[in-house]
Image: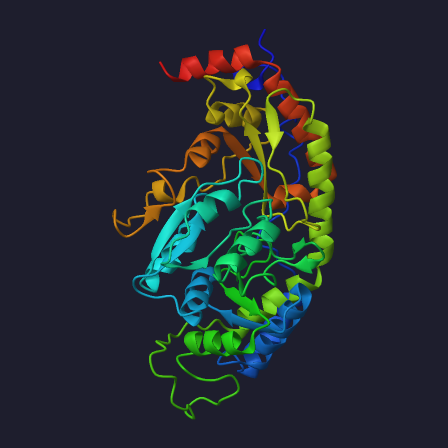
Length: 414
């Protein structure tokens, strides 16, 4: 008789006892009542009091003086680059493992993204690959704090400062994370966050820039607010600076209120994520050939967006991670890939050769090797201790029956 449930064995998690995964996006009656009050107030947008309150509290939490709330985490990157003066003919260095917005934000301001490889342990931008890609055309660097790790800001900033290149931190996955005692997003010239529905703080859509530079803060605000300065009433605009092409990238007070309520519980939430991530790491450390994405050497606390397993031991040669996920799903909890993969291989990434380049060579070999061996769980799964224990049990069972995995995979390939 087979051991694995996918071949008829007994499940680790009985079908009538599903594991807890926190419903997402988070909802509660208290926030719903506040949304009703806001609706009746009519103060919905255009630098409303609620937007200002959220900006102030988010900046304070992460250790900066200013925050600029806007439509999404793509516009935040675009406005950051535009405020730094990045434009046609320039280059912006980005990591291979990221969502398309990181690379496309450079293209939106007329620059070319330069894609560099990742560190095999953290899966974030490799500082050495970044430095090798710098040319006189490099006008910005965007390290991404990806999934469950913080990019090595100490090394990246030291290299960037040596070359006089500004850094924009892409913190779309890292709300509430800290590096060496200070909030992520506060180390570079600008920090960019996303509040898309899957994120640790979620409002459907939304994004925010943080900075302590008053000139940059003003430029970013003008760029997202069609040239209006902060505090200027609608219909009383002054002349926007010549050459600063501004947009309507505003968000609304409704999103700000939802996020402000979530911000109040963010510290406790990511403490729970961190506790359970450490537990899951400890419970799986003895599985041969399996390793965990490392969180970043000076990251504490880590703002987990997801938690990733890398099956790159020789034991798994010839076994597709989709097969591993299918087996885990049959046992009671799946581990979908959940990663973006090399940005330049995403079906929606349609820049032509000449509109982007690689830092070295014609690909990013570390990223291309690791991506097909990676599976991950979302942050919603990290909320329950028993789920961590059972997931570890599932992984032990699945990885102890590799011959059955190969048998199942062969049956699917017929």
